[in-house]
Length: 127
Picture 1 (cartoon, rainbow, N blue to C red):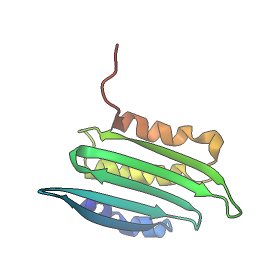
Picture 2: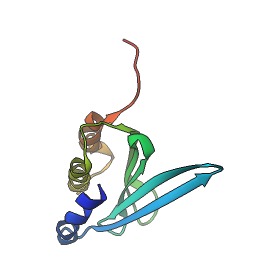
Picture 3: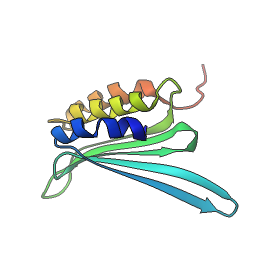
Picture 4: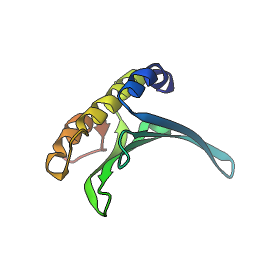
């Protein structure tokens, strides 16, 4: 994913998107786990972030705050990323999300659900 994101960094810059990536190693006793935080900023008050954990676990948050208080919109989702999504596919999802966030408000959060719901597994469900 990091290689795919690096390859698309120039295209993201041309879209006025600032990307920051943090790799965090958490050590508890004798076990260690890695986490990758990716944050995208396009406008001063609009932000999209993703946390990737071991085992393909993913947590995403997209939001835009109103300068004088409150939220214009806020969307979050999480689960396990489907095995069919590789690093390149994940970066494509990031770019689709950033495009969908343009002129978004609470009434059209379905744009982001349409992008992410098919790609994130939620666990077992009873039939």
